[in-house]
Image (cartoon, rainbow over all chains, first blue to last red):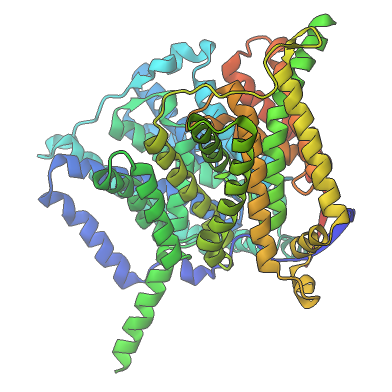
Length: 338
Length: 292
């Protein structure tokens, strides 16, 4: 404890996931896509709504995955970006009558700027310290949204009600089903964008920073630029998820976007597998459905049941859904050989 | 000027709570290199145990000692049963484990003792301390206990063999193992001590914030902030950090217009982050140099 300096071996907080291991193969992707397309035809409206929320949370987890799994930065402040996206959409739709589809890119741009700016002071922090800084952002956000001089726009503690859009061109679809397909299209577009981003020059720069910051900068990667860029992109995608969330839930209020949301998204990322993009949807399913299952098992002890289930998952598969996928692949490979 | 001194005094009084918690946070960070998000809940549970003992007619100090022993054993048990198997898992998986532990303890305490707010006794009394309205004898006692605890820990780590072994296991585990230190049990011991310190913090804080399963939520955030501000590698820094955060928070609430109770926390956190931007390892932390 008295030593002024200590040299540690450069072990990293986030494990190195090679970029090819971050995505699914074409065949599997098409099967998943087909399942997502057909499923809503057979189920009730409430389940369609839940599937929409699954996609939306999946998108938010994906955004965190790009930041943590891609560039190795840790964030407990995703709920703040989610809130900014949701409020941007709500305010634009209700005060300025902007079409809901147009609010998404605007929310994305606003959040990108916000994330990029927040990334600046966060540059000097890493690990636990970055976690604390993002955590501060997440705890401050609900209070900031309640501020008096913003109340005219944000509706203060009461929040804002958002109108749910009808299906366009007179399509014979319920509002929920239309919103599901709309969300699906947005999510797929962003998924393809993210996969390509991680395979591009920028993605390689992110991963170089994640694996070894000093070596990355020695090889000519502009560490400051790419770290803030990762924050910006992650914030933009989270913001779009927030916008979709506001439209789906039809309501925004400061207390929907507390630190609990940020912690849920973090759990989703761990359960899905850090750095494995398709795992995001598995993680989202975990954070949406497991609390309900826990409540079903025991009302009074739902928190404890949730904790036990979470422990079971991380014992069995410490690397999340990615580990299951890898095991499955190996099994399939063996079967093919026989 | 009098307002200023009074606010600083009040800040020191609340700061003592944060200092206690921060000390427990740093202890466990020393032992396992992770921030334990469930630390507050563990402290809350210990506090409930002591309350239950007192309900059964055990005297304060006996209950205090039994709770310390219980917490020490419970801390070791949690490490052995729940976290030892995760030692090789990725860091983020460990963090998820802490969140799970948080949920389990919080919900069990709620079921056993329900969520009504309970009074908790203080051994120091609650009369004004030395005629000052802002600091009560309990708060003065709390500061005293924190300082004593800090001194005790200092002597333990500097002058006992086992303290030395724990330091070695935390800073260079490989070499420590080579000279025959059982590093795995040193980690368990760290958990036990941290849980016991957390229990002391909980029992000192309970008379101020009242006893209920969610009593530690806010305190733990400030405790983390204090530990990070002081430098996660320094127990002394954690205590100083605790007092500073308490003073920051009170002064911000008094002098910055428009800052009510709601915005105190974000402002305190913002201040801490500005400190961290200038001194990334905290005020008293070691600067860690990484080998590429």
